[in-house]
Length: 447
Image (tube, rainbow, N blue to C red; front, side):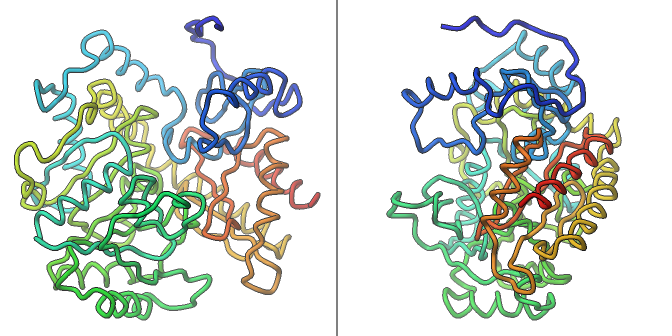
């Protein structure tokens, strides 16, 4: 066995630095060990093994430093190993690691519920249940909506991604690799066309009419318990819907007694310059799903919504052994405090003001970039055969691989694998952003 990691307070220099091949020899050795004991279904995009991180920099076991434009897929939104989050979690670890809130409760769970009630859209009474993961939040949101309405149907949109549990796999649009061979799946899930302006060219009203007509024909409004919508789609490719699309869907849901659920697992928690992306569209969801960035890297998720809907579940109907763990909850309280005290909503706007013009400049230079889209620190470029809308997934893979070799961690996305997404932490500097863009420019030039 290897020695345990020694405690360290050493600062991680906020700079890109490659000192070995990528992956380096220690990562290669770890990957060989992994192959014999970790299920192959748990794959890794880049087999470099991370030893420590801070701010916007990842450091692997070979000493290579990567500019992190993924933040653990939107988890470390306020930065890796944020000092306040570490301090809060450390104090909580010394006092209470677990007692199970449904047996003997504790204050940090209540604090998180209070903060979610205060910061999610809507001035009505709200309540929350805390769970462990985004997929678990989706599962609970759906079951609460079903209990409240007495209906079974679940509406979802094209290009949606909601998780890897049985129900959430049924809700996903893209089957491979998430769903392949894992059926049968949960029933009563109905998929409808979404708003994808780059491809469909529809305005918000027309796109909403298409979605509504499809749902009314395939399931019927009176049989729908809920419509689950990502205000800005994540894995699907960071689609920002056409203006007016989401409010029209919410209006239809309200008129028909359908619970409107906003899945803000990836786009929430300060990612877009607001606490929740719904605010950009004037949405006031009945239920809000949060996870990923809520606890600064610790596992936590929640369902927050109208008190009368949340209270539809009977006592004992909600919960779980680790849901709302006191350490994760303490970290979440610190995340909310950091967003406020450090003005991090404005940092998302700053990142957009630097990154989006840089991406638009790349688009002018390389016609393979068909679309630049996103809000705040949630941006993407879609690659296509120039002059068409035909996806170019091969170039996306090549750009991502080139960037990794030169110290920039890029995430891919999109139903067709042809989207590069940018999810930097709000701690990233302008200098690191521009350095990363220079590497990506080199990658396009070298293709």
